[in-house]
Length: 569
Image 1 (spheres, rainbow, N blue to C red):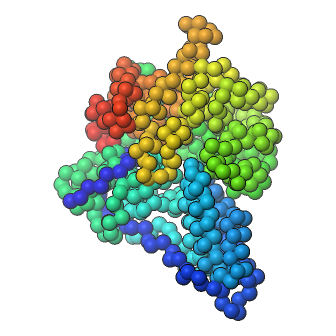
Image 2 (spheres, rainbow, N blue to C red):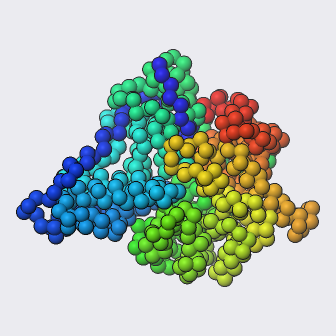
Image 3 (cartoon, rainbow, N blue to C red):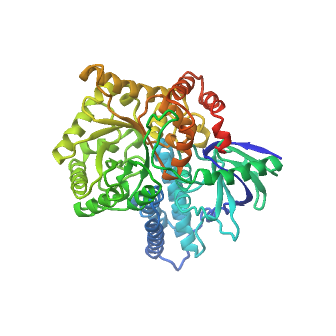
């Protein structure tokens, strides 16, 4: 028996056989030249045709996906036709290289450039290499790389998964997911949570595993064990029994003493919203409007946007739906809005900042949101991503007022927004903490990189202190503007940290008013919240914030929540 330790991103305990991701597409021989009978023009044409096929294939898969999976596939499809990638390859073809060798070398060059830029753009390098392999496979007439198929369910083990692969994981076939790379807030982790797959990432050494090996995966503790014994099998059996206990949510998020913590869903479109409503989510805490823009070479029209938003609003009549305006830039470039040549896009023009470089797009989006809201019975709130100053919050609020939207808010993803929440909330009606980006920016750690997984952990006391600062800023703003009796403006969490049942208790103890997550995570979070009082949650929050490390914060809290082991979380 051997144990590998990683970062648990989705609770669950399973035993099953390993299937390892197949070998990557082999590189064409170095220096491979195009055949003498093939002209440079013909080779370039073949390359463009192969790239177009890959783009359409990915778009086709995106059309069948929802939420994060859809967005990831559409973004990867755009990369298949990236002008920089194809232009670099055609230059190599003109110099004599074969089409396969040209796209391979061009992919290396573009990926290296993105890695040098760091941050979100470094994550885009994986998309480039994935697309490169798919184009080469198309040129060779062989199957593209992807998830292995099998008659029986299996545990998928990989170094890491390309976004296009992660987005199409089939929970009916894949029992759990284990990767050597990635981080707790990578695309792989986020989509595993959305699918409810037990998952462990950043598990060094799991590349040693082979097809057919039987392993035990504990997605709550981040542990992978080979040759499982009676104890591991019993744990998996108990988890299977507990799943039925966690299968439902009655639509009322609360603590043991009745203190209300509404549990909302993160959604990426109408299909997600309908599923979330069926799961009794109390509303939508994050509507990612990128789903309406990604995959488009031009800005979607008013009517198209209205129809897309209304599909979400109609799933929650009379309930709150929080809309995040377009979060373009960094890992979500849009040809009509963002500048792909920025030296460091993660710190560049993204989110609300695009309104300064491409004025009009945001105003038109807000008009479409207002129109859709007017045609529905949902209680529509709107928030802007990447707000860093009170002036930016005021500008966004003014745009919302002009559009007829009465509840403008801000995403708190930048440390400065947390530290100046008192002033930002003079202009916004609520704040929502995007803990994925807040963690990344606080710890200066790319959330996609496995070696930085320990830093890029929302349990980091520094990140929790910023959550606390945001809540305290809201309370200070209420005292300043309305006196001691005025209720503070709401502060929610819509980042992935809300889906961790133990961390959800800490967030509630810090004073967060709502939690939003994948609909699949709501029952487990609800069950754990109902096991503690507000006083206990506050005590656990203080323990976590005062801890010297993320690992110690997590350990302190989990040790005082026996319900986690009872439920297999």
